[in-house]
Image: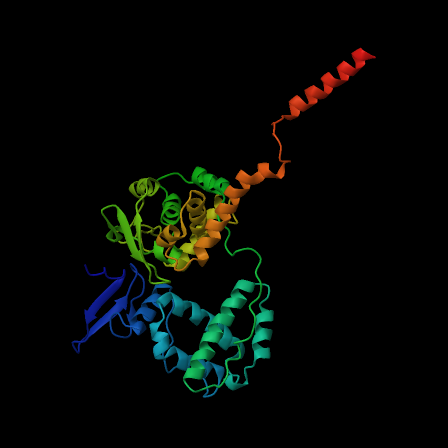
Length: 366
């Protein structure tokens, strides 16, 4: 079955008989999309238009040859760049915009390990973003070596910043209850919550989910980030939320006007929704973690968690299964801290009572 066309696409033949594609959301401006339909260039232009941005013309404001900006431009025209998923390209484009603004005119050959370490330390207040920057620049210079522009990767031995905790925290059961008490079935907020929690998928995947992905009670979608295909039976709480709505035509989660949402816009909106529900430390990704924790605590195996969440290998799943196992083992083993003899359980009241009785007995003997 062919995949449905992306929303807000309009096609038209120009006066030369050439098929031209445009992006137009409702009564908004019509934006011309360059490149052949479905090509990496076309998809990049579509994603930019959906975010309300316009891609710069390839030849506009070119970087001087040998500059860091020039190297980035060559990288973004490479065959390797074309293989990246749209979400990956968007993330790297954002990083590169900041890099170019700060050091785009500098010779890329002058970038050293010390330079990259200083850039990392300058962003130490946000260690996660600093580490992402290092990963993106490591990829850029790795490609530059393959393309013959550089001999060494200046980011290769630069250490990542240590991070406290595990990123976005998982929602607690109390926080889940508080959100459900705030937003009832039939609201956009409760629908989004249910899709996130009861599919366990990332925000980039849940905003693409629609009825076209469901067959015989099973939702099937290929993950945007990993390309892994997951098959998810529709659970009762999710079915109830979908029935109550409101949903769109090609997407379950839609904006106030019924239009599909980008993952960035959805993430921003859902963060505000959490604040209003009194769970300000919670996020869309934290619901994915809450689902993984629930499944692990109810005995899901590594293979089962991988099948649900689209992970590969055992690393991610083991974080949840090991935590759940520790909880179960600790609960069952606490009694072993006592002396190895016949154990009797005492309540505070009974101990106090025995103390009073003993005192009364001693008093009667005197």
